Image (tube, rainbow, N blue to C red):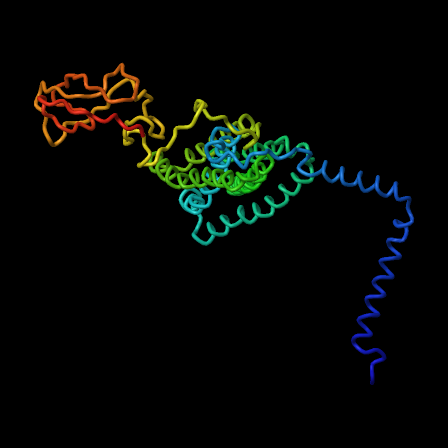
Length: 372
């Protein structure tokens, strides 16, 4: 069958239909008073700006760098709490199968199954707990760092491993391990979100997260090593669980006490004293040390002198003048500018500039020193 409309006609008809629908939807808005429409738009824009970043303007500087972040106590609170959370996670993921086999006398197959249960549950708990935290926190609470309470609560539940040495039932042990592992998975995600809440300079986002991950990896790297030494020294896992629980409590205190300020909000002023003028970098050819010290030379550092007050002297010329030789020259007090026939005694190893004949018998006329 032949279509009723060709392709260009169908496209134009569809565009016209969309335009009519859009006009129907916007007709009521277009019929408003123009002044009221402008006021509504202004109110909507102010509401958007107020909701953006919780009304907190970003700082004018580009970032404080690693040194500026290290000087913030909040960064150290995040560092310690992240490390304590990751320590517990690495402890259970590396030593739990061995613990179930040696201390609880389970087979390799059963130890694998019971090891998978806590980590399977922790995946779902981590998603749900952080979703609830986002729903309960307002914009003001987020920018105020209230998410640290969720991190501290996660660390308190992570310390549930302290009760494992006092429990004999396998079901109770698996339940306590599940609580500790689930909390250890909730805390790092909340800690990462807390970094965004406290950070004021967008230019330091990568550095702040890198420092946070450094804390987690440092403690996580030490967890299997420390646990191995503790188990070898005590002959059991009870002391290892106590160490992990104590670290969790330390992390909770650090999160509540230290993670209260902001990150990257202020740049620390430099301790260097301000200079009134910068040091001039002279080129090699224009340095004052290599400039000839002569009157009338244009250059920085040349001494100022009056050519009419002193005679210009140079090193001894090739003709040779013995010490004590008399010659003619211009007297220091002579300001007429004409040559003088009065003799003046030369110092040893010096000669007048422009000396013609060094013979003392016949006085010679010496032309005046030319001014450059």
